[in-house]
Image 1: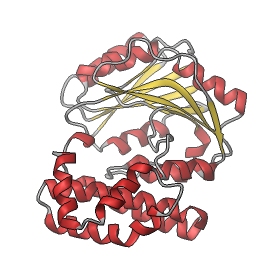
Image 2 (image 1 turned 180 degrees about the horizontal axis):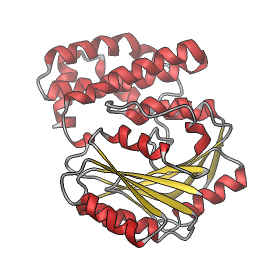
Image 3 (image 1 turned 180 degrees about the vertical axis):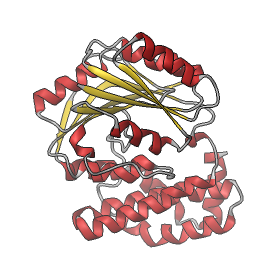
Image 4 (image 1 turned 30 degrees about the vertical axis):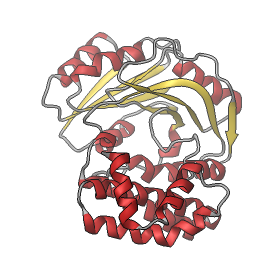
Length: 313
C-alpha cells in the first residue's frame, strides 16, 4: 500500500483538484493522509468531507507548524509500504501510481522518480509511455541532483519505500527542506529509478517561494554549506558536486540580493563565488548554465550585479 501525504494550508482553491487526482488513479491500493496545518480558510472542512465519503482518506488537524511539520505528522501516521508526498496545489496524473509501482516491482527500486510538468493549468494529455528508464545507485543519483542534471531533490514526484524514513524526518522551520533531506534518504537506497514520464504537475502560483523574495530563502546557503560539510566527512567523492551546488546557490542569492538592494548579502555571496568558480569552471560534470555564469562573473561584481537585474527583475 502507498501512503500519500498531502499537507494542507489555506489551499481551498486547489484542494478538490488535488484530491480528485488521487481518487482517479488507476492503481487503488493507497491511503490518503490529509494534514490540515492550521488552515484559516475552509480547507479543513473540505478535507473532512472527503474523509467522510471515503474510508481510504483520513484527516489530521494540527496547529500551524509549516510544511515539514505537516509532512512529519503524515509520516508518523502512515501505514503503507511506500510513501508519496504531494503538495495541495499540485496534482498527479491518473497513471502516476501505476507507473511508479510498476517500476518499483520491476527494478526492485527503493526510490522511483518521474518527470514534472509545470504551469498554471495541468496538461490535458500527459505522456503515459515513458521514453526511457535510468537506473542509479545512491551515489550517482546524489551526484546528478547536486549537479542539477534531471534528477531533483524534491520530495514530491517520487515514490519512496517507507523504511527509508525510519530514522529520518524533515527539518522543521527550514526552507529548502527537500534539498536538506534528499541525500540522507538517497544514501539509504540501494537503487533509484528515473522514469521519463509525466507523473506530477507542479502548479506555478504567485505566492510560491520561487516567485518572491523572502529572507528565509537564505536557508539555501546554509543547506548547501551543510551538504558540502557532510560530503567532506562522509563521502569525499561527492565534494566537487556539493561545492558546485553551493556555488549555484550563491549565484542565485547574489542575483536576488542585487535586485533587492541587499548589498552586504551580495558581497558575502560574491566571496564564495570567487572561491569556488574556478574549480567548477574546469569540472566537466558541471552544467553549461553554471559555466556561463562563472565566465560572466569574471567581468567583476558590479557588472555581474548589473546583469542580474535583467535576469531577475
